[in-house]
Image 1: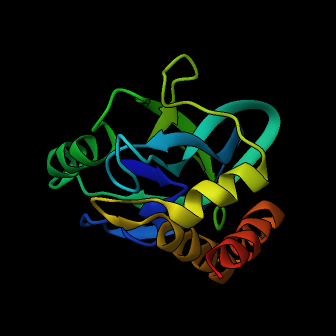
Image 2: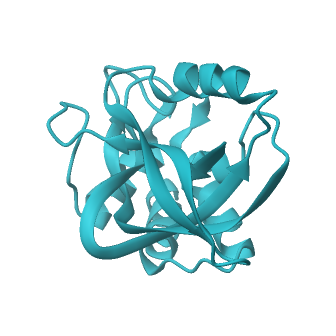
Length: 174
């Protein structure tokens, strides 16, 4: 079994896996388009987390985690508890391309439901203001952004939006 991580899973998977490598999913994009009232915000002061959303002619690079069949049920249970804390995400199986071998494999990932009330579309500046102020059960929203951008950069995945958000959040904090 493969799991495709595009946000916090890339720096904090929280489960046992056999191997991991860069991978890419076509016709989806990574964006801060999900209100977080649990992990990175509260009901009264929601934060923002990354979501994978359908987007023709775009792609998203992330990490493919290979999970042994021996651990697959345990990993799925863990991921469902973590990712499906609200009903904003849908668990789906997608085709991803592994970077090294160029092989196409099926992977489990979590995609935002655009008709859910936690789905949002904000400008980058609006996102930065929210991220700079929010905090939830798993910590500060800005730490989520900083950790994700740092890991993406280490992996050679450059996102001008993420870099801009980091700069703006730091400005909003000072």
